Length: 276
Image (tube, one colour):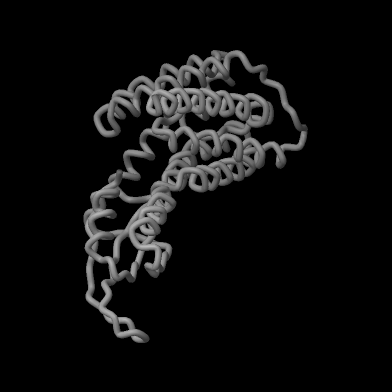
């Protein structure tokens, strides 16, 4: 029953976020000719010249990318992505293209933020909004880099093209929208951010078993001695993602409520790191 509720929740969340994406695009970005980059940016260029609906273009361009995603990201991911792309395409077709604000700077910031939040939540749920998100996720797994950063870099190619079409003033506002969107994605989707845990405990064996069962990752163990009571202790060192932090802290508190835990931000991980 819990699995069913979780599935329903994920389906509703992906649908709402896809609609939020379409809303941000049609009310903040398109009216001011702000290309968001990626597939939607390409769709906007085609719409500008051929007056073909952007939703239909997004759907067509995403087909080969979805095939690529099946190979590297799995069938479940693709099912969520197809659902998201369909809802997004319908939203782009149904939601009127009408500016909420006449301020282009405000529209670029708010539109980019809403767009980034929507994308980040869909990715966090286990899917994507298609387009460059698929490529970004594949590269993120291969190169251990942030999804939002990779997406922003690829979108700059589309932005450069928009400079020749709509002028460089518009392009600079587009850069703002893409930067805000990239930051929003990385703030919402934290699975790629790594943390190093150093745990000092008197229940080393029990805690090792609990953490390995939780994450299936390696743990480095050092024998130590407390300077005050001179009791034997073990120092456990492991790396987790920020997404796993709350569950890990809960497991540590249950296993050893008196454990001393030092949590620090990890800039980069080299070597094998299992991503759950």
